[in-house]
Length: 76
Image 1 (spheres, helix red, strand yellow):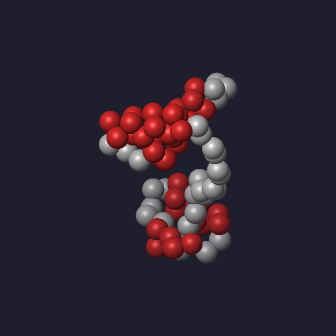
Image 2 (cartoon, rainbow, N blue to C red):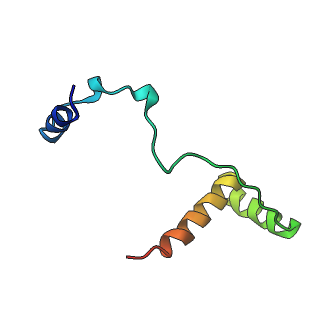
């Protein structure tokens, strides 16, 4: 199918999922990339305490806080 035909079907509200290979689908910009950050012991303890209070993992808490901070600094 031509891209223009695909676009027309999509714009018309047709279900186009039959034309997609969802096993190969990706979300650009959302691929995970590992980074290492060293924190002092007191900070890790504080992070763990807050993560436990909220019922989330330390990693989830750190990602949430960083995402929130970055979101507040986006222009617009």
